[in-house]
View 1 (tube, rainbow, N blue to C red):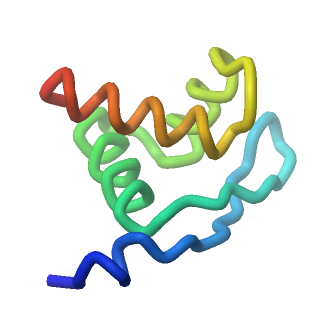
View 2 (view 1 turned 90 degrees about the vertical axis):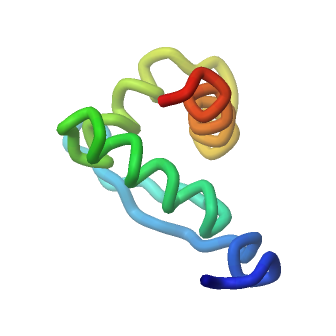
View 3 (view 1 turned 180 degrees about the horizontal axis):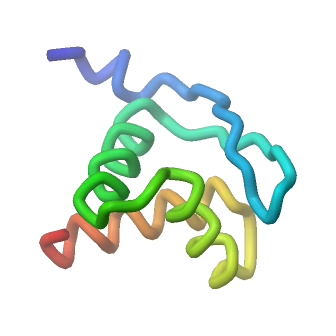
Length: 76
């Protein structure tokens, strides 16, 4: 298992939203949980991020972090 330093490392990933590529900067631990949530829902990461994107008001990366945290707090 990776340590806290590795899990907190920021990584830029590309996702596709509405047919356009965009980048998303997330810590490793948030990316891992986003992938886990998408898998549990039977969705691709792109599809899940698109849903988050539709509901957000601010920065996409921040919206994804909040979504992941709320999902974990709600037992998803």
